[in-house]
Length: 178
Image 1 (cartoon, rainbow, N blue to C red):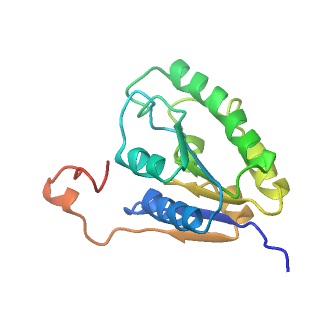
Image 2 (cartoon, rainbow, N blue to C red):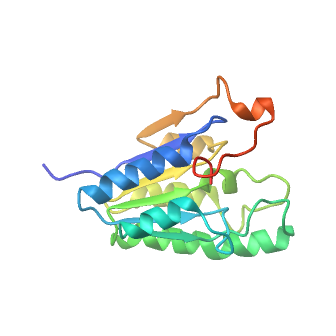
């Protein structure tokens, strides 16, 4: 039986969405699968622990964003998304990778402080998921997954916090969150 690529969505307000996706990427690479990770919000101007670790394993990771939406102008974010979306779509549709992680795509689709629908149309995202090469697994992370993306997925996991040290004023822990 030919293997079927699945669409996985990790969403919710709890910690672990990207961590789950990176764990799947690690497992896939360990099984000899080709993996590419595109990060929609993170900027190539910063260094991320996961990138250093995955590079050592030969896993491609690329940041296509420019940081949090409040750090740059809407026009700058729109331009980053305008460039990122075709790259992501083409990466999936090429069939060159067995696993493609679209990290924080849900966050990008959920931006409501300025319009992104013309540079990142949810309809095109769903069309890509429905027409991707059969062998390609796509993993999408981020809060506030769009209902259409969830409907197109084969697996949706919603991470919800029960307890978090942020609530006690403890900031992000190096090596665990970044």
